[in-house]
Image 1: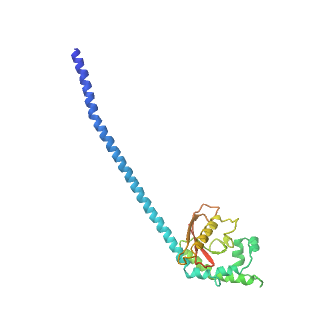
Image 2: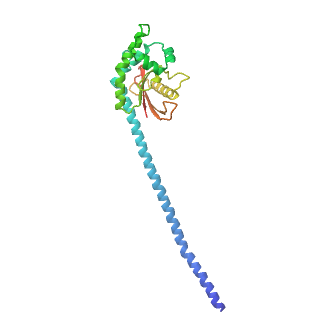
Image 3: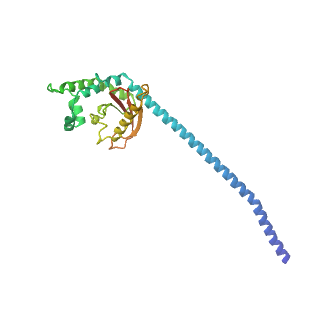
Length: 249
């Protein structure tokens, strides 16, 4: 009877031992394959993410290259060169207006631009009449062309800024007319930062006249909204009298 009990105990012990011996390799094999599979999945995921990153990087590079080419093409266009001319363009006409700060402050920039400066009225001939009429005629000549150009392009707005930082013309945002982007207490810090950057970059490229300085900045043109705008600022030539600023949504 005792031998039978001992035999059963031994039998159970041997069965448990063989079970452990048989399960252990399976567990080890399963852990090995699980680890290998996890590594493969991790490598595949990393490879896939790296591929997505490279594709997105190429897309971004192509996007910025296209935008840079677009703004360079516009800057070299007849419209840009003629409208920004010192003698027969909007820049030269703006300088002939003289000191208009008092009128801008009294009427507001947009109101002065739309209701006074670009509208033919019954102004009497005075010291500012010639400059006023010259700018009005230049505006009449180029504004419609600029608006048509905006319809065909991806530009949101185009601004002409003289080398002193004064916004002499904006197709859409007339509140910017006459704003000096180099003023200390400016309401447009993002535009100021961009203008200073292109001004500095242009000064550093004086010895390379064939080089076209371009600056990309990501900012909101209007501080009261969260719209993201991409701005490019380009100095046309080393001795140019104005700068072109183009904005995209």
